[in-house]
Image (cartoon, rainbow, N blue to C red; front, side):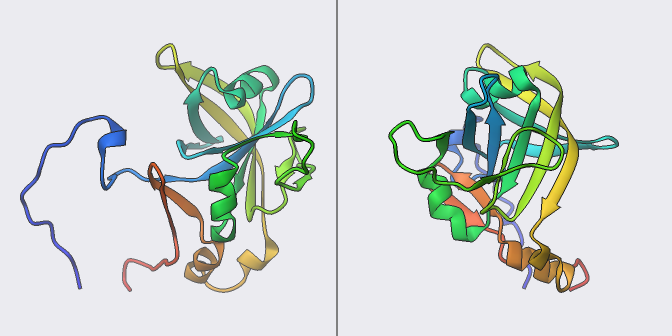
Length: 193
């Protein structure tokens, strides 16, 4: 059944925080970065998108004062880790982590070496995109867009089995909907289906 628009539109504020439901959703990822001193930092982010295919480039946006931006601007490397639904609660609760933990508790993530960058990747995640900072763009005094040239990609081998729609059902990536609410991609189909 195709749901058609009612035709009647209602204006809402341009502030994304006021959109309920949000017409723009973002994939939730965990970005790992390293300071010049070698401290590893992990933060949940959802303002991320591919912006070019040649060379393969993605854009990650965040506050310029955030540890993620500071680390990436200093070391010029980062890893985008793709969690599945099984990590949804952990991702939400541990939205930002400095490794090793300053409170003496064990780290919430298992870090493993990346193939192409010095920043480690999160073993529990289903896929990893290793990036070298290509450029950045400041939008205002608080926000920056970081353009990462993709230099390496890895994915759990089990996700390569089955048809493409089955692979996405198994990956079950997290989607940020609005503050306090996330969803999961749990289905995929071809346009002719």
